[in-house]
Amino acid sequence: MTTAYRHRQFGTTLVVILLAGIAVAAVILSRYGWHPLGIFAIVILIICILLFYSLRVEVKGGLVRCRFGCGLIGKKFLLAEIIEAQPVINKWYYGWGIRLTPHGWLFNVSGRQAVEITLRSGKKYRIGTDEPERLADAIGKNLR
Image 1 (tube, rainbow, N blue to C red):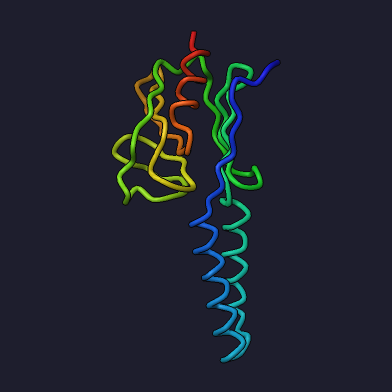
Image 2 (tube, rainbow, N blue to C red; image 1 turned 60 degrees about the vertical axis):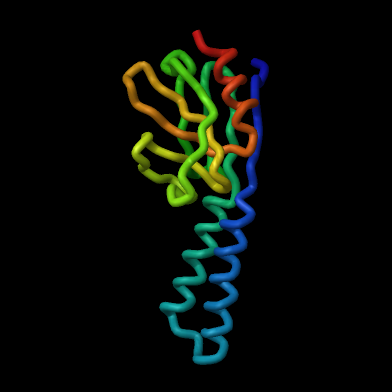
């Protein structure tokens, strides 16, 4: 089966912010003592980096698949259930990660650009990407 589209977007800003949090926590802990709560905070930030450092989007085999970071968190959509895919710009305050917005669920690691997909059920989802036109075209060409 051929892949119609595959792209990975790296969440540079998100990773830098999380790394800065780790650095600040490490400095505080080294100066004031290694408290278990501080170590727990660093572990949580490291886990967040592993889970959300990138977003891979693939259009293949009748599916649109989104996977964050190491691949443990993701979402897939049947192309047969999608009726429309169009590039959109998210509001800046919609943020990154997995969010519920006024336009449905958003999956995003960086930037404001996304592709909004509308399902036959009427539900809408937004997939963040730095290639909105290419992704929308790949989905559109594979709709039934």
